[in-house]
Each structure stands twice: as C-alpha cells, then as structure tokens.
Length: 131
Image 1 (tube, rainbow, N blue to C red):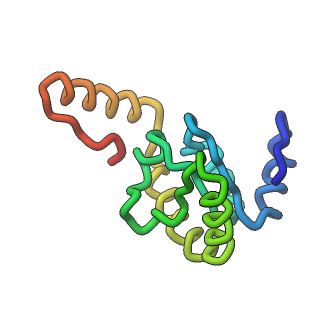
Image 2: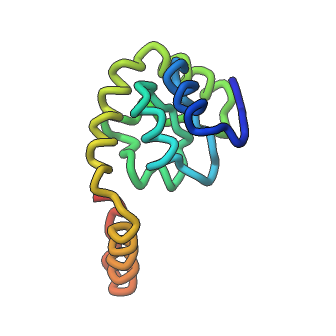
C-alpha cells in the first residue's frame, strides 16, 4: 500500500500504470469520476469502499459488485483486494464500460440531475442519481 500526497500528474499516471490494482477505501468520497478515470485509463482496475457516493454509480447487486469493499472490515477488505487481484482483467473490462458511460458526465449535467432529484424528492418521487 502506497499513500502519496501531492503527486504530480505525470508521476501519478506512471504509478497507476505500474499498479496491479487501485484501492479507494474512503468512507465519504467515491473517486468517481476523477481517480477512477485516471486509474482505469491507465489500465488499472479499481476497488472501492461501499459508500453512498460509489453506490450512485455501481449497483451493489450488479456486474461490478465485486469491486466493492466494506471499509470498516479489514479482513473483508483484504479478501476483496485478493479477489480484485485475481479478477482484475474482468473488473477492468467492466470498469472501462462504466468509464465510457461517464464520458458525457459534465458539471452542468450533474447540476441538472441534482435538480431532477431534488424536484422528484420534493414531489415524493425519488429517482436514482446516475443515469
């Protein structure tokens, strides 16, 4: 495990390219789209903490569920990382599809979605956050 703050982008890209797997165990932040896209674009699969931000993008019962970890369970995280290393090619293929679907994601589009969600919630019609 390597934690390096303030890494210049060219070095960060090289680190992602050399890594066997990226792990983002944050309880609060998700890593999508920025760190996720950097890692997957460099050809490295990603394991995420199962948190509300990530669950906006990854269905915990869907095909990418194997990339989700419980950040409060160290043994489960270790098992998940081993699983990720063993299946990283298939994880990466699925994550590339997710990355492709995010190419149209922009801040104006995100704002539109948030407004739709807030309006739906105000009217009693909650919606999924990622489309």
